[in-house]
Length: 511
Image (cartoon, rainbow, N blue to C red):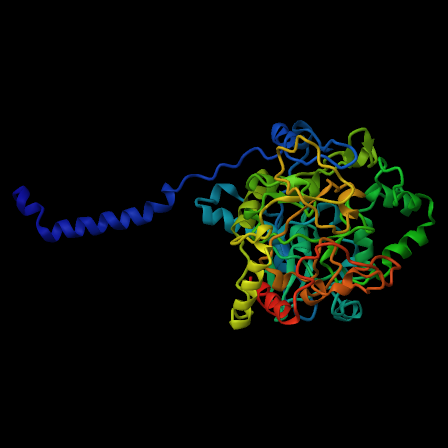
């Protein structure tokens, strides 16, 4: 057969079709490989955090050598169902899985694979310190009556599939089934009105008050400290001459616990007095959706967001590597500053890639004629100067009253004006940098409480000039024992007419 006959038009077509099919099959392999950096890197850490107001130095962290000396914890976890919704044989099925890894990087080929693995890490990562096989705890989550006795609209929040948020099952290395608290997902999952969940959004549910749950929480506390000493260890600011946390050190345990349990007005979840924060000056839980567009992490811009590695680093910090060390001040007992376990770098980097993939969901509010009018009000009032479209933030930080920014703020993009909001979190906590970052307005429709400390519960309240008065009753967080107080600052929009305000709020809810 001649070469001309061998390469007939029909054969050429078949050859091209086959070549295209091979190219499609090989396409995923040609994607650039995901390279996981060494996350807990001394050089990256040295330039990461913003100096603390009043000290002029950033927090200290374990060295890379100290961090990587810790054993790796790499265990899958599983949802905890309400006992009335748990599938038949579910716990036996989990036990049969044995201890399995939360991530298997050798199986990840594409960026989409890594993002999906990161979603699993986000949902499955738990707090290893809380794991328990205590029969009282297991019995609580086996009895529908026991769970229901402590479950209302705010405790042991349940999805429409019957999953109890905030808890996970895990099979230990010894094959024992244990129950634990969720990690990232516990603070950054929002239960929507239809029973679905919005991953990455601020939570709107609290932990149960059941004794079994209290016993799990006790595992996370410094047991050798009194309640007052523990309060100061978590929140005290020793470089403040008039530190408001100092008075708690000598209070009886019952007085401290009564203070922490007191109603301060806010809705469930959303606000959190995290370690280094303060129940006196709480902050809203961060909305992680759209995080790839933000230059700084935390309401007070405590850390830079230079890429996915910084988000992964931040997750490591708050869950595994927080030492409570600030300049010469060491707030935690030495034994508790050691890194007990660490997650695989691959797991935390995949988690960060997943979070970087999240955007705010489309708003259910219509962009109608009133919203169009509201956009005109927004533009005409100069709101876009700080809340610049399309991100609806300029990604700058604003100094608070009582703080003078140092001259060498090259790491921060500082807006040289002040808006007068309450400076407590920014000046009187260990998360205080002297600044608040300008938040994005995207996603206002689902986020819940407004202002950095959640003082108001609606946009209508935010644009109500009565909030500036001392006799105002905040619709969100008021403060422990507080019945009324002003919600100062950010006066923009307060002098608009009623129609313009309604239009502006309609527009903001569409973002």
